[in-house]
Length: 470
Image 1 (cartoon, rainbow, N blue to C red):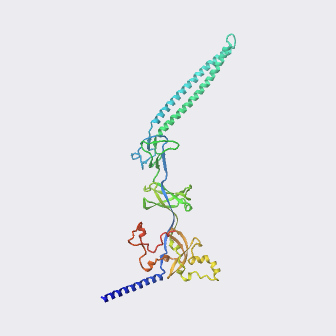
Image 2: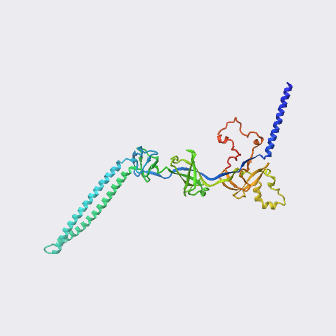
């Protein structure tokens, strides 16, 4: 029994010694290789884009309204013989809806009667002119005879004056009759206009489609009364051609300078998450809007919708392709952001100790050396960058010229860069250096709100940390 206990103790001690040795070996190995996470420089295509959201809109929309007031009595039929409703396809001239005509028929009858009366008054005025002209002729003859006789014993002076007055009155009556004829003509024209207006209003009771298209929205029902006041009430919203459609994208003022007419664009909609739609910029609207001090412009993206998949008013996630680079050397943005600690830099690249005699030289080369030896890139030009490659247990800098970026990968150029070169993007965690499992919550802890993407393993090659796009 005692021997058994002794053997167990010896075995435990041996396992402990082996475990300590293994841990020391792994730690030493991790220290020897510096514990850096690296990826390889690779060739790829870089596409720079501007992202924004917008709404799918029909290219041309017609708002069909009513010019008269009345009760909706019936809907028309579409080209398939079905009652007009949402999504009905109509031709130009198709009857959409009818308004009760009773009041307008009465107005039409009244206008017709008024026109007939005006015409009769005109005939009467013409006849009165003839009558006045006949009386003028009679008065003129009597006045001529009176002038031959003159005031004498045969013709009393009062009678002479009466003939003269009768003649003058007859002439005036002819002028009055002629004026009455002109008035009758004007009354006839006014009555005709009233009749035409009554006919037009009666015609407005039957509302037809002005163009060929599809009804997007029906805003009235049978039995509903429409009232036309200062603005025409809207009855239908009609899209002229849904095979051509637009995306109205709101673009921030900081990005609008990079967008121009004819630029290619792509977008997706939630209805078809796996399909990418292509289009081109039509025009940039100048009527900018401001929301919470953020100025945005509306950019029209034209696209083909021959298959009819894009429905009006879908939300679109658009990307404007501003530039493209093909088959260029690229590095992750995390590699351009990472900076080593001074002790991690190879000795020949470290900043020399600052002494009393080195102050002047250090000042003259401060900007260049701060970039080279672990300092930030604040003083560097926008096209300049720094990446680090492993040199044994340390790292050494490689100055690069940066180009186009897509938010995740950046184009780089440098004489020291080759495809496949390992560059540093970060450091491995202490758990990884010790060979143990990564730190994390207990497997018995409920994982609330954790998606599949967050639980998936990192991509091969050691990608950068989340949010490393920019």
